[in-house]
Length: 159
Image (tube, rainbow, N blue to C red; front, side):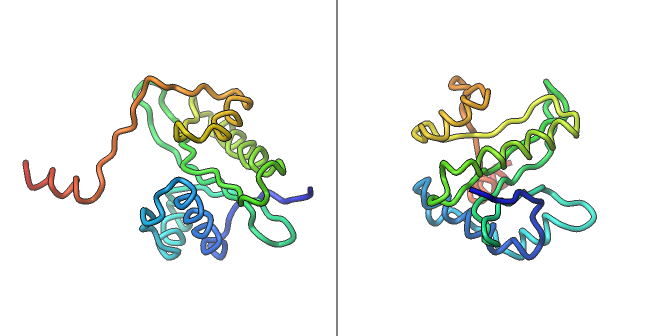
């Protein structure tokens, strides 16, 4: 199958958000997405973009995305975080996911990061197998900790 991988543009953000929503549904969190197209456009483009997004296209339709951003590790230094790699269900197995991951890894290499990291749900065995096949280590001894807006607000009230 022929597809094109390129940097996303502001005008792609509606389709990017569609993929983010599809992932939320797949991950059994259909109401979790709060980000808007406008926020994606505002935060991903301009003088100081907060993320880089690659898209996979087939016949002028976006069939997948990879969204990543720089962060800093106290152990490793400059790190690239892959927030989401999503391929439309009907295109899984086409090679688009691998090509999107290639672009993220190439970006990390060009930025001279010491680590590229991401999370994967423990029940998503297809994604785990895909990442392990690509050479990623799945660290099962680490837990992911988060605070949502309510937890942040409650914390602030308590200090």
